Each structure stands twice: as C-alpha cells, then as structure tokens.
Length: 377
Image 1 (cartoon, rainbow, N blue to C red):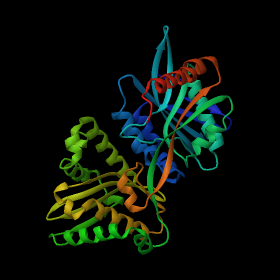
Image 2: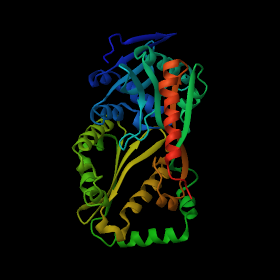
Image 3: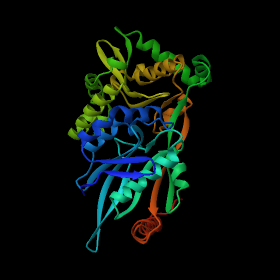
Image 4: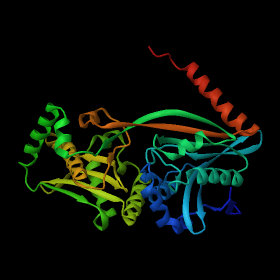
C-alpha cells in the first residue's frame, strides 16, 4: 500500500508518513536526538538502526512506514512500523508494528519527554487513518521502563494484550569500581586476576576504546574476523555467514558512526585482535550489542578482561549510569548484573474487525497452542 497523502493533523501536531529511505534521511539529526535522550535508552529506535533494518531485514510480504510527529518545526515523535498484509475471504487487512528479530531485539516508539500521552496516541490515530483496514499493532520486547507501555495501558478505545517476554541483563553504575569489584565473588575475582597475568605475558597487549570520530565502520572487519574463529561460525550465526547480515552491519556501523553513537572495544595481543565488542553509547548508557573473542586465547579470558575494562571506564566516567547487555546469559551472573523485564504488547481497536480478526483470533490460536503443547513436569 502506497500512502498518497502523507500529512495527518492532530491537535497541534503534524504527522508525516514516510516510505522511502531517502525521506527518512531528512529527519536524521532530530530523530537521533530523540533516541539519544529517551528514558529507555534504546539505540535500536534510532535512525541508524531502523533504516538499516528496513533496508535489509524485511521479508518479501512486508513493507514499512515511519511516522514523524512535529510540533511546528520540532520533531516530537517517531513511530517506525512494519506493515504485514493478510487476506481473508478476498479482503486485505494489515498488521502493523515491529516484531523482534536477531538484529532488532527491541525497537520502540519515540516521543519527547513529557509529551508521550499526546504524541503516541496521535501517531496511532495517524497509522489507523493511513491503514483503515488494520487489524492491530504489535510491539515486541519493550523494556519495562518504556513510556510506550504506560501510554498504551491507559489508551481508551483499544484492547491491549500485554505479555511477559523475557529479561535482559544490565549493570548499574554506582559508587566506585573498587567497591563494585570487591562485591564480586572471590573465586571470580581470582579467575580474572589469573587471566590478566596470563594475558600480560603475551607481547603487544593493547586495549582500545574507540568512540567519536575514531569509531568508524572500518573496524567492523575486526569483529567479523574474530567471530569467524568462534563458536558462532560453527553454528552458522556469525555475521560473515549471511550476505544480508553483512550488508545490515555495514550500513548500521556507518550510520551509528555518523551519529556519534558507535564505540569499538578492542583487545589486541601478539599483533592480532583477540576480543572485540560492538557497542553503542547513548546519553547515559552503553549498550554492548556484539561480544566476540578468539577461542585460541581462552586461557587468557579475553572477553572477560575486555568487559572488565569497559566496566572500569564506565565507573570512571561521570555520564554513564548503566551498561546494557539487552539479553540474559548465565555467565552475566558472575558480574552481578541486574535484570530488566521485557514485554510484548498487542493493541486492538475496539471495533468489530480488529477485535474479531485480531484480538479474538490471536487469543484462540494461543489457547489452542497451549492445549496442544506438552504439559510441563
């Protein structure tokens, strides 16, 4: 569906609908600033991430639209939406929203702080105006600190289904690094100390944190090379295993670098890169999105040594409140990370078609799956 009229007015807001990557580029700076300052601190909601996802990760039956809410000349809201068409007895309907994927994890609606209760409902109304035959909205894996959740829970005229998805780990930065490190288990601290001694017996050991204009997409080759030596290559999940992923990460790194968000965390020894983290810096947080190390140096625990240095630098900084890992693995517990809950939200307009085709049909399918699944013992 090509939107012919791309301007929707709601109270003082003007909402523009965009369907080409070139048009997305007209909003880059203001859009990235909203993502930079948003309380949920999700770089996946930035221009860099959304545009790269739209270009490289949609399936053949999906299209996209991005809504921009302006209060006069100020950008106050962004709602990226993947549009999936469904046919029923000869009629075409649309499901709107963004589902999680290995490359998105959590894309949220953005709204200027303090205006969420006005901006988000206005953008939802605009999406319905552009797609009157929609059957619902899906927002996958939104963090519990997302303002979107509060707005949707109190939105009149709609039925909301909120489901727990998973937890993600993050490290809260407070007090001092010495106090934090002393809180770790004695056994883990001992292992870190031993690994560090083994590492520094190697030649040319160097740890680099590259950000600002030093963090360019050229360093992506280091991550790709290290991943190709790891278990990810054996499982077929390394970036180099997919031409689509290669294109996605090339564009993502380039755009994050241009926005000043990109950070490379690199550990080198013996003239080689032995660990590298793909990280993103926002206003008060650092997201470590990709972690990889060369398993031939596992006796030196290069991944842990690099992460410890990242934590130490965050404590020394005055503008970092947390290091976010987004996902959850058992080894994160060694670092005494806290857990953040994530939710899936499905929003249906209180009208016959969205309720019958969207809400009730989804509820019946979920009930059937739960009945047909083996019982837990």
